[in-house]
Length: 577
Ligand SMILES: [Zn+2]
Image (cartoon, rainbow, N blue to C red; front, side):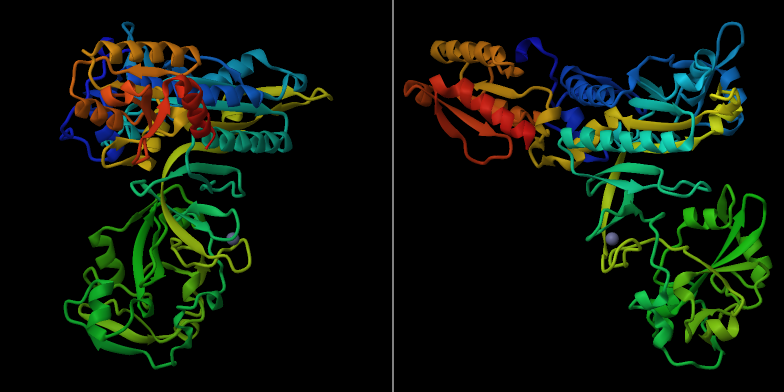
């Protein structure tokens, strides 16, 4: 690529609308432009990075035995009505009508479409298994599209769907895809963790999110410092014995239950400070309403956070929401901030960390009063316990001996998921076994956010000067900076190197602009190209040029005759790092 013939509209200023680093740098580096909220143009260098991710994904999916297809972006409502998702999907589904007033949607995922292909074409156990994937533009009508490519409305995704005769074969393919995803993100040069994801009622370990670690990540995750276990804090299992928790207040002295005056002290922090008690000796009583209208009082230690995902699973319901003020007043007979477990008109459930504890503080269900000396075994002997809280750094790992959680932020770039027969049953995708018996197919699905992976790579790899592409995702490999384009000798050398490096299989951007060297260096850093070759007057007089890696502070002089071999070697090293 020659800079002057390319569209690389770099900016000196940060775009006002950009909230995260990847968005800011992609816009400043002239790689994307916003067209509408959450909808972007990919300019040449941005598209090159996208294509790099796609190529890695495609190669590894093909190697794993999956076959690429392309399904329509515009999907007929009928198939979505068959699965029931037309009604249930909500407003993220962009519904449209054609000129005949027929309903369609812009596909946010393609379970229905792919299951329709398979039910029409496959009928026998001999046809199975099958794994079909596509790389395609998707649309999800996010309420608040933000963070550039991290949470756009239109985005490019790789979605794969596998079909099997039985669960065992589906499990086998799940492991195959899991290993494939590890190869993909390894090859992308990203630091990531596969974390166990919520499987709802199914349970087990057949759902993983692939999280790229970055401080700006939206997801809070924990990982064990000893074994491979990692999970979203909302979902991470916790060791269930209170003895494993050094902060458990079990050792506190037993005391009689006492009502104490706590005027206007409502929050955990207010009450803890007012009574001079540590937060872990307080009990939070949270009132929740389930999707079936049941009212539940959830007890959590004052220093812990409730996981609504765990609560939902424990209660076996589709959704939970905090009760509104009126419901709290009715159930407790007190204003907000004084709810407690004794006498509350709701069913009770407590987090494991509260089992066997005493000397606790809770709300008294009376304005301006709390109770002290609460004893679980004496006062709440019938309390049902479950793992309800979010995990945090320092918690003991449930899978190994002596492992402890560390906390990270992550960006979800991929997910593997066991679907079971949900779609095959709804859409009647069945096969005949060897005995002629009909069964619904077992299914798995496997997604990778292609454009999101590009953004995540930047969130993980950047500095104050710009992007630092992992070499495998870089839009080009080498940036040639002739410091003075009007110098005939420099220009001639630049042209020669451009041709030779290109001939050696490298992708090269030649900065042939009539700009000051400072401008070119700034742009080279901003664009994040892994290698920079600088041709200057003095070095060239000695038959040398300068080579510098994007993260190196010092350039190295190399003889002109050595440039191609040296750069090719450096590129190979960076690509396999
Ligand atoms: Zn562990």
